Length: 223
Length: 309
Image (spheres, rainbow over the protein chains, first blue to last red):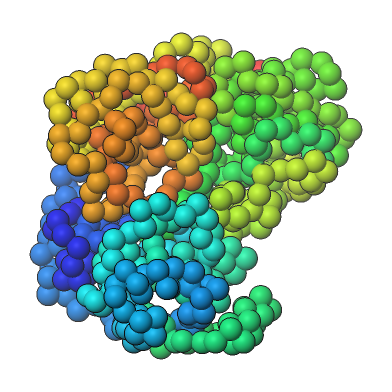
């Protein structure tokens, strides 16, 4: 179900409100839902609910979604190391944006980001909130392999790679946390609607947190 | 216990999949050919969702170490027990020490082996299905290897049954895959849509559990081929800038930014997944109402294919 044709916090908030209402209501025949920027994918069992009845119910909930207040969002703090070794595009991105590396890191780490939705690979957040000064076209030649945890920017997006994968974002740093951990009871760190901030850490703290994550003793700051 | 002697090309533990996780980017996994998988389970007296094996192109060889029954369905991989030919699509009782081998597929791509009781691996997020790319579920989140050992849940010997021969799919020829157009069919030219529905398309060897990649007449775009990323359904047919279709399957990415010309009907996903690289297929569009009717028919047909013997 499409609620608009642009990427905006307003439209995405309505998408998440619609999903919330669908979950609350427990619509018969609805199997699962996937929120994205401006639409909600609804999987349904047509032997339980017909197309027309489902669409009518969804249209009614979409109208309600405009005045629905979502539960308060979670705030998640992600430690992020902006050393050149991990933020391997930091200098090139700073040159392109005509900023110093220090200004770039400051602007990126002081912003608060909203998780529009999780998708593409397990646990990968699509986020709003990149400061306008940091908008930058994607890399002309995507990298063939970017390590999991890499924090990148491109277009109006800030992205965090959840698994090792190819990609076209400018990588500014890396978080030692696992956005996707198949060995954990709950493998996914971030949720649609989360508010994300980055806390700047040095290499020593990155290594210490990495060890704690591997030992299963690190508790991310979520409020 | 089942001891793996040769793992085959790509053999994974699957059950009916892991719904509810797409909003976190985790695909459902499960068998590509659901009907064949379900029939294998029914032939050994299991519930439809018991965990079994999906073999790809070349099957596995294993030794059975407990009395149990198996059934092999799906792709035509010749079955032998202790070197003697055995029939697919029927209940096969095994004794400890029996060695079962599934050969290279003569037709189709994916064969299924069900074991009475089902395979005992720990469920992850409510399912035993393997998602290899995400290292999740199944046996340690990976394909089987030589010397792996699989435990089975205890179960009484099942009543011997078979799938009636006329109900066994052939997988050969040039199948017609039924689709419902949309959600972005308006992004394509009239000629492009006509080309899509005329075909034929040839299956490419890069196809896997994530997506079936095909080559054929160009499905031309009216305007750009990118959209604001949205959700990708089972069977969504993405068309990137090269005009060639990719049908997304059980291990698909949850979202994507290419235009989608149509969605393969759920009851034809299995048939699509059995088309070999180099084999050709055509697409036919159904109205949504006809697709729902055909779904009911295919579910009803599945209830009426087993006989004693």
